[in-house]
Every structure is written in C-alpha cells, then in structure tokens.
Length: 136
Image 1 (cartoon, one colour):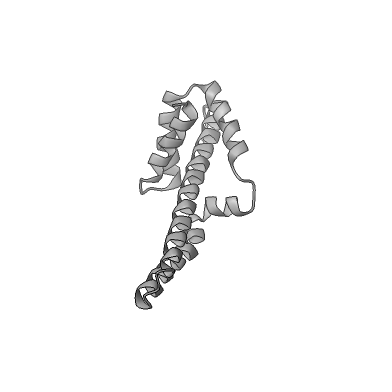
Image 2 (image 1 turned 45 degrees about the horizontal axis):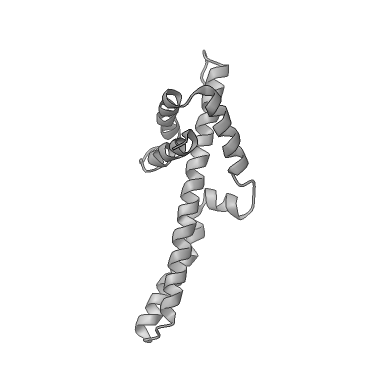
C-alpha cells in the first residue's frame, strides 16, 4: 500500500471521530509527520491537488455529500412505498436504483472529504516547517 493510500485511510479514520476539523487535522498531523517523509508529503500534496475537483458537481459532492444524496434516498423510499402499497414489482427498481445512486454518492463524497482533510493537514504541516516558531 502506497503512502498516499495509507494517508487517505488515516484521514478517513479521522473523519469517523466526532470532533472539530481543527482537532482532526491536529491528530492527523502527528500521524503523517511520523509515517510519511517530507519529500513524499509534497508528492502526495501535488497528487491530491490534481485529483480534487475544482468546481461543479464534484466540488458540491465534496462539500455537501449528504445533501446531494438525499433526493436519491427519497427516490429509493418512494419506490419501496409504492412497490409495497400498489404491489407493483417494477417500483422496486426505483428502490434499487435510488439506493445504489445514494450509496455511490455518499462513498464518493466520503473519499473526497478525506482527501480534502488530508490536503489541509499537509498544507498545515508545510506551513509549520516554513515557520517553526509561530503557529498559524
């Protein structure tokens, strides 16, 4: 497993913790500073900047993944409701399609959110290396 993949997994692990972004970044800083060499930190940062969506739908999913997936959860629920109440087997396809779309969007948003947290952490690490005496 490469350092990039391992760092993203560490960021995803921090996302599961209920705390502020500053606390998540602080905990992630320690882990990355100990496990990833400085040269590779720069490479990882460059790769993450290239992978992050600059605008449009990708940026919206990265920032508001649950709000974007919510209509698809609604479609899945409505398909289930109409499939059961009207005994229409074809309505269950809406349940499957909406549920699959919602899960895929949530998963993609989770990955993007972890990458954004990792990118913020790497930027903060880089800033602390440039200015070791004062913290920003």
